[in-house]
Image (tube, rainbow, N blue to C red; front, side, top):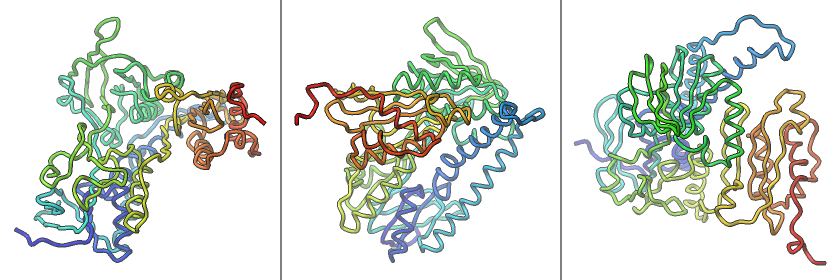
Length: 471
C-alpha cells in the first residue's frame, strides 16, 4: 500500500472549473494535485466544445464553397476529405493540450493521470494510467468529474456500438447515411455538419418537437431551416429496437402516429442527453450525497454534504455549459477569499452552433407562461435587418420577452447570423437592469446584425393603461 501524500487541495477531474481553480490556488502558494483519468483539460478542449465547433466551421466552408456561385465565384466539383477535417481538428487539440500542460507546469499544480476514487473522507486512491497506485489526501477537495453521453435503454442499441459526440468527431470517412437519435444541441449541430460534408442525414426525435426547451415557433423554424438543407426529420418517433452495426448497416424501428417504421442507415449517432460521472467513485463512503438523477447535491455556494468538499460543473447539476463551470470556479475562488458569492439568480446564456446559430438568455415566452408571469412579446424577422441582405443570411428571427407591468427585459431568443454575439448585448442590458427603451433608442452602428434590436424592441406593445405611471 503506497504511503498517503498530503495536499492543501485535491481536485478530482481537470474540466474547466477544476483546472482554473487548481492553477489559481497553486499560483497563490497552495499545494494542489489534480487527478484526471483521460483528457488533459477536460472534455471541452478535447472532445466537446472546441473540437465540434472546429468541424462545424469546416462544414460551413464546404457549404459556402458549394454555393459560391451565388456570390460570383466559380468553382468546380466540391468534395470533403474527412481525414483532413479530422487532422485540422486534431492539430487544434494538440495545441490546446500543450497549453494546458504548460499552465500546470508554470502554476505549480500537479496533474496526475489516472482513475481516482474515494476510499476515505478527503482521500483518493489513484490507479495511474502508466501503472501503479497513489493515495492522495486533501485538506480540501473539489469534485469536477463531469458527465458522459447517455445511451437510452432501447433493445439492441448498445450492441450496434453507436457513435456519441466523442466518436463522431473521430470519423475519417464520410457516412453515406447518418441516423441521429435526438434533436437537441449535439444532434442538430452534428446533423447539419455532416449533411454539409455530404452525408444523407435523418434525425429521429421521440418528443413532440426538436430542441424541446424552446418555444414551438423557434423549434419549428429551426426544423424548417435544416429541412431546407436536406435533413430528414421523424418527430414523435419512439425507438423500439435497433439492429445491425454502426459503421456498416444499422436499422432503427420506431413507432409513429401512423404505425411502425424502419429507418436504415450506415451510422448511428446517439445524442440523447447526459449522465453524471458520479457512479463507482466512492462518494457514498465519504458523505457526499447525490440527488435522484445521480448529480452531486450542493448548496448555492457549491458546497457538498461533506465538510470541506465542493463540486463544480456538470456533476454538480450546474447548467451544462463550459462558461457556467467557469463561473462555478469564480464562486469557489471568491468564497475562499472571504466573499459570499452564490449560484442563485445568475443569468445563464446559451447557444446552439448551427448555421445560423440559436442563442437565448433569460425566459422564453413559454417559460414565462408556465411561471404565471405576465409578459409582452415582440418578434422581428431577420430579413428586416438590412445587413442580412448584403450577406444573404435572411433566415431566422429575433424574439424578446418583456415584463407586462414594467419595462424589464426578461428574455431574448434569436435564430440568425451572429445570434451568439448579438445575444450578449441584450444580456448586458438585462444585467444592468436597463429598461428596454434604453436599448431600443441606442445608436447602434449600421449596417450590423445588432441593429435589429432597435426595430425588434419598437415592436413591443405598450403597457396596459392600468400599468402606466401616473404623473
